[in-house]
Amino acid sequence: MKAQSIDFWFSVGCPTTYLTVMRLPELARTSGIAFRWRPFSACPLLPEQNTGPFAAYMWRDIERRAALYGLPARVPAPYPLQEFDLANRVAVLAAREGWCEHYVRATYRRWFQLGQEPGIEPNLSDSLREICQDPARIITAAKSDKIGEAYLAATAEARAIGLFDAPSFVVGREVFCGDDRLEDAITWARRGTLAPG
Image (tube, helix red, strand yellow):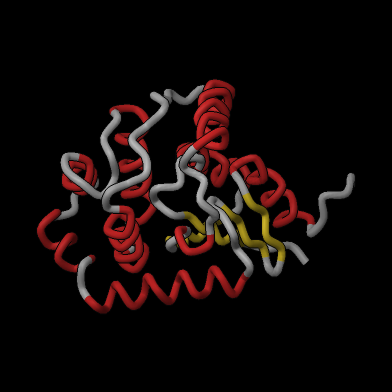
């Protein structure tokens, strides 16, 4: 059975997610598939990956793939993030209020194109103002117990699904991990298989 939507699980602070958030609106439009933006904390699910050969590979891979997609990318970008959780708690609030995609795209654009770290100033307030949100209201609400509990619940749900990295795409019970699997997730949502038609 064909799926009508794909759950897009992401964590602001996962560098390769930049590639996805910048491509997703156009792919959603051309594929006709709706994407549900699902923020969570990837930290508890990820092995230590911010040092050594993996980090060098990650930045070079982002640089290559950004060029492939025609996206500007200044790498390495600031990483790891000082306020990873606040950036994601804002995304949780944004998902509840219906402006998640706009916030995440503005945040990642500033991170990878201007070198401004998410979750701190000037990125946080400038991204919120860009999408017509009041930084004072949003930051206060994002720090509330209610949003904290929702953030923990989303992370627990991601763990229960079996996610281990971000970005990830879930179509029914099928999990596709990594920006390079986005098109596979779209194909699966359309046809229920990756096998040639």
